[in-house]
Image (cartoon, each protein chain N blue to C red):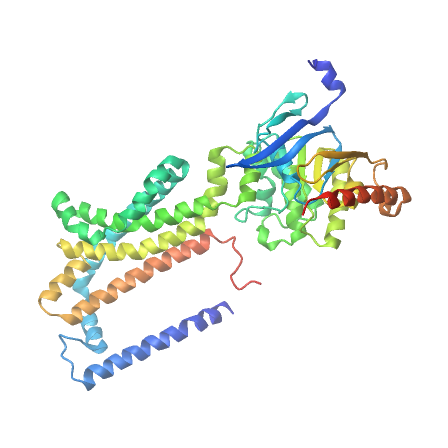
Length: 256
Length: 267
């Protein structure tokens, strides 16, 4: 029953993707498009089967970078949200600035970070942290401040301390919201990692893309994009699973 | 000054003395409570009836220490406890069970807050849950329970709290008529066994008469005590009490007073 539901939600987009690939393949051979402009899906698949081995090293490097950056970014986002929630003055003074800071494109900061921190892992981690912390912090703060009024009154009348209200009511109440923030941060972290590698690195998918760009190996660039998409989807899927497990008390959506 | 002996002689679990409260926002003044006094002897059940929106829930917030009254005092066992929190057990209008806790953990919440959720408390909670028809639902999350079951779990949470005084804020108002009379009976049996000190806010005259020892009638806003009715029926209350001529007479009398008060209300 459940499998059937899953299948029912999967097959329409799957069919769309397959149709798109067929169309792409047909267009490249029909209009004789040069391989270096747009390789056909078959070309990319061929490249994947032969050249994937060399990519493994780069994939691992990117994975390591983005997981580290994602973990730090999420932690910074959560800590910031908790601090701002607990100290109202911090919230009223810093929250507008945090929102404003999002108008600065992180990518534009990357060259600066390279100048300040060199070409090691540190500036890359900072770039990923910068793109990750914001969705987490905003979602967490929003979730924390929306705790149910009646439950809050109950806790206060029962004599609950601030700490008890925080751990037993506000955090669990904010958890779904926090997790949606983390889901967004997970996909952002992939983007952040690739961009950081574009700007200065000696390994990683982003570095590999730059390398292939200079030799017009479009097929290899497409392969790199496919890997990035796969990593992104895997991150999203893992967080969604974690969410399902943490929020298992929620009724199924199709109830009622 | 009260001596140790004198407040043993008149053990008022809760006494409210001349409480007044006005909500102020900018230049708007909204008087809500007007010189309210009432007393709850230990082990008794009192009810407060008033027109809707008269500030009954505000009174609970004052008793619970969430709001500070402009004038007047709250006394518990002879001690002035105005503005102190954590001294009453509160059962809100909506069950307000925590959706991420299973029913047993919800029932034990108040104990947990005071650091007394040990093995004995678990056993006690399980026993009460069995009595309340919640046996077998210990591990179920609140959304799996019916409205009546949720409300019973909310009651047990209040009952298992270590505080002596229990405040019930219109606990039956969201239930359908049938469940409601079941729950009244259930609460009555439960209370006659446990004999805690209870204040019930309600707008049902029947409910107040069935359950309580004393009824306070409140006026429309600003709420003041209009009348105090001592309910004469013996305990344990009989199943067919609602058909007793004395019951009907008292109900008619209170109903008439309430109607009169409702009419006075400015529109």
